[in-house]
Amino acid sequence: MATPLVSFCIPTFNRARYLQSLLESLVLQLQDFPYPFEIVVADNASPDRTGEVVQAFATQLPLRYLRHDSNIGCFPNVQFVMLQATGRYVVYLSDDDCVLGEPLARAVADMEADPGIAVTYAPWLLYDLVAGQSQGQFYEVPQDLRIPRGQHAQLLDHILKHHIFPEIHIARRDVMQRLMPRINEHAFYAFVQAADYLSQGDVLIRSEPFYVSITRYFADDHRSQAGSEEVEYAWDRYRGGLEYLMACAGTRISAEERAGFALRIQQMIAVRMSVAIRLRHAGHKDPVDTYTIAMRLRGMGYEHMSPVPMPQLAAQATLHFLLHDPLLNRGVEQLVCVGRFDTAATRYLQQHASVPVHFVDRPSQARSLDRALLFVSEAQQDVELDEA
Figure 1: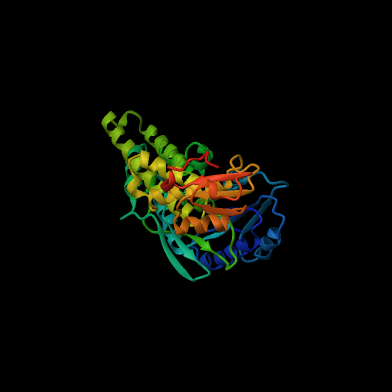
Figure 2: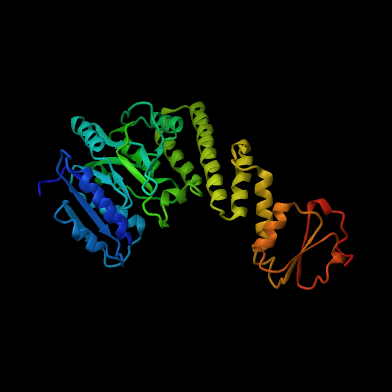
C-alpha cells in the first residue's frame, strides 16, 4: 500500500450492518479517488461481528482494524482513532454515514495547493436510504469562505450569519496533533476546535458538501444519532462554544462589538431551542422539560419562535406532571377530576392514567376520595375542597 495522503478515521461500536453498508459505499465512492488513502477502524470492543465485516473488505479497501479490549467510551474512541492517522489529511467518518469521493478529492486538492489552510469545513447532505430521498442540506454558505489565521471575530460572524456548525472537516494531521482536540461538556466541541484551528492557520468553509449523513439506513432502523439527540438539550453547550470563540477574538473587538455578538449568539441559541421544542414535541418527550425550555425561550424574549403555542405546552406539562410525578402519585389509587375538561384533556387522562379516572362537577359527587388525587380544572376554581 502506498503511503496514504488521506486517512479516513471510523470509530465504531456494535454497528456491524451499518459499517458493512458504509464500507460498501466507500468501495464505490473511492474507486477513482486520485490520492492514496487509508481507512482506520477503531472498534470499541463490539460484541457483534464488526471484526468479520472489516475482514470481508480487506482485499477491496486499504483497511487498518484496531480493537480495544474493553469499551473506552465514545469520545475517547473518537480521539483515539483520529490520532492513529498517518496521512497528511485526516477525515472523521461516522460508521453510519458516507462520503462523496469527487467533492472530497477537490477539497483535498485545494489544501494541497495551499499549505496555509489548517482545516477545511463543509456542510453535509441528509439522505434517507429507505425512501431513496434527499432531505436537504445542513446549513448553506453562498460561496467558499476563507478566514485568515487569528481572525476569530470574522469566523464568529460567518457562523452566526449562516448558522454554520463546523463539524464535518478535513484537518491537517500535523496541526491536529499539535492541538490534540478534545471534547468538553461545557462548550460545543465543533466551535471550540474551529477556534483552535484558526489559531494555527487559515480556516476554509466550502460551499460544496463532501459528506452525507444517513437519516435512515434500514426500515427497522432504531439507532440513536448523537447529533439528532444533542439538539434537544445542547443549546447551552452551543452557547458555550460560541462564547469560547468570541473570547479567542480578545481585544481585537470593542465592547460595542462584543455586545452585538452576544445578542446574535442569543438569537442563534433561540433558534436552536425552538428546534429542540419542535423535535421534543414531535417525539413525545417529557412535556415538563419541553415546557421549561419554552419558558426559557419566553424569558429571552423569543416566545414567538416556539413552534408549539405556550398554552398547549403548559396543558401537556400539567397533565403529564399530574399523572407521572412519583411523589404526587405515591399511594394514589384513583384520580378524581372536578369541573369541566376539554375533550383532548379528558381523552389524555383516560388513556394515560394508571389508576381509574372519575369526572365530577363537585368533590361531593365522587363515590369516595380515599387514596384519591384531586384535580380541579381552572374553570372550577370556586369549588369548596373541604365540602367532601
